[in-house]
Structures are given as C-alpha cells and as structure tokens.
Length: 230
Figure 1 (spheres, rainbow, N blue to C red):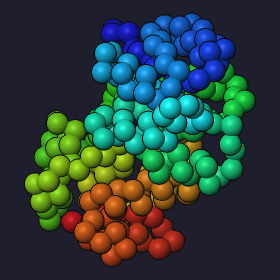
Figure 2 (cartoon, one colour; figure 1 turned 135 degrees about the vertical axis):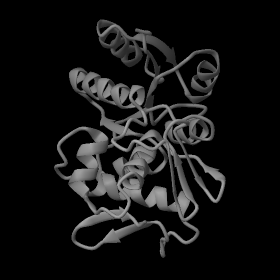
Figure 3 (cartoon, one colour; figure 1 turned 120 degrees about the vertical axis):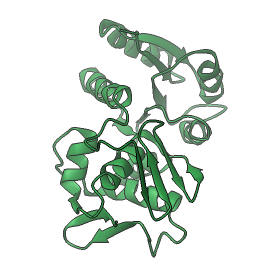
Figure 4 (cartoon, rainbow, N blue to C red; figure 1 turned 120 degrees about the horizontal axis):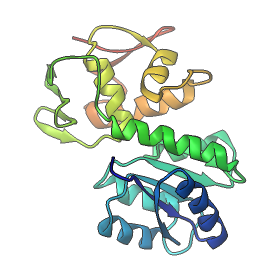
C-alpha cells in the first residue's frame, strides 16, 4: 500500500515537530511548512493526501491558503486554530476545510480525525449506486471520474461536497435526514450535525444552482431533510 503523505503547516516549529511524531507513529509520511506560501510550494513538489493547516500564520494565513488550494485541489484540509467559537468553526468549513480542531488539542483526537479524513479521501466516490453516470435535468454526476457538472460546465466541489451530491443524486427523490447525511458521508454518528451539514449544503447550492435561494436541484423538505429531485 502506498504511504500516505500529510502536509503540516504551522509557524510554530514545536507544534510542527510534535504533530510529525504522532503522524509518523501511524506510518504516515510527513512534509512540513511554516506558512501558506511554503505550503503551496510543497503541494507542487509532493504528492499530498491531507493537509493540517494553522489559521494564524505570517505571509499567508490559513484562510487565504485554503482558498488558494481549493482553486486547484480537493484534498482534505484540517484547520487548526486557537479560536473555539462556533462562528469560527463554520467559517473554516465555509472556506473549504473538511474538519476543524481547536488549539490546544489532544494529539490522539487529531490523529483520529486525520485517519478518518484519509479513509474518506482514499475511498472517495464509492457509493451504492451502480451507474457511473447520472444526469438529472442538466446536473451530471460521473462517479468514475468523480466529477459533477451543470449543463456541461464542471463544478469544483470539495471531497465532502462531492460525497453529499453523489449520495443524493444516486438516490434521487429520496429524502435524507441531516443525521443520515452526516452518518453516511462523515461515517460518524450524526449528533449535533445540523450546522455542519447546513454549511456544506449552502456551499453546494452556491456552486450548482443558478439561484441558491430558489434551488432547482437541492431541495429542503422542512422538518425532515434534503433531497435532489428526479
């Protein structure tokens, strides 16, 4: 099996080195950067499978770095930040991150989240639906190529956004509760998942809908959940 590589980006050398020790104990290859600019350079030089990214850094902070990465790549990003408010967690998700860990963090929790994200990334796009190409009124899912397009125009989705769209499209017409979406996509119990799922749904609508406030594809069924209509 190919060794997975994790890019650790933090301006604090002690934190970088500490995370490296735990990741290497899990058999992971570790590449380190001290700010966003160096992180972008490392991404171009190495095959990276996941990024652990601090928010507060000189030259290019974590938010700007995430925006830059998401212009070209969809590898999982775990945000590190000393801020613990819900609004900051939601912001991290809105800018394209896949998970959020608050400093100071339990290293074992961070490693668990890393392993969870890597599992999702490695098995990216594997769903119950047997058809590789699904088209619903111009919204097209190609599960072989792991792509989504609207009227032939490719849509850039994060891995989690893609999984949500693929789940709903391969079960078009079926309503999924928030907890069920979370459990199927995140592979974790869906306790208190409402904000997390809602943020991802909103971002998906911004990408696939002409008018996100009056969605054509991704519909809410009030009090129940979400669906993509046939």
